[in-house]
Length: 239
Image (cartoon, rainbow, N blue to C red; front, side):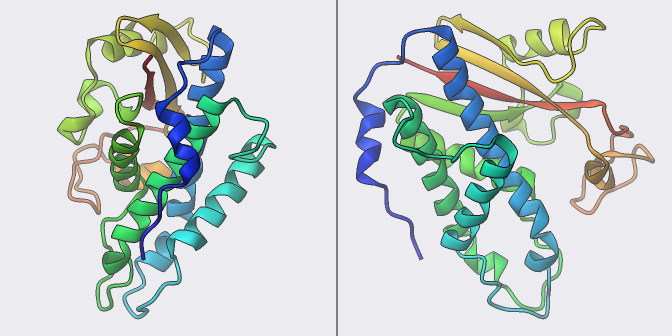
């Protein structure tokens, strides 16, 4: 099953970035919350995905996106896409949902594979694949990336660039930074926002103690605790 690119996504190519920092921040924040909703749905379905005795899991792109939009509504109190959103922001949201749907469509053989337990289709993998597809659909106008302090990066593609690293080290890891507060500025490439993320209890199976022990994905655990800075969602919007 494949997802079709909605005709409304032509809006993504045509309008300029909206004027005003607040509108840009709102657009970036919506992308971050949609990504978080998508990862949460993958997390909630891990037992289903990893059930070796079940073939068709019923986690189709349509079923997945229905759960994502419900999760977004529960998280934010607003629908993921609505008629009253600014055209640029609406097009971004639609592109991200399309990217998520395509990611799930392509993962169907893996998700529905019988006789295999842990399949490695975890929230972090889903997010990376969906972000890459989103970048293709956005045609250079927008990008979403999950990054982290260099010592926590497990995939080379997630390494922070100079701007991301400076924000993480000089702001997010500073004693005076307000927990959860994003940082945004207009830079040469366009508008950029970095949103800190912290380990929750559910993250510690892979990232907790004892440090150095191999986790289920084959990586050594980092020995982190709930509440520690674990990474950041990096968003770039370009004119």
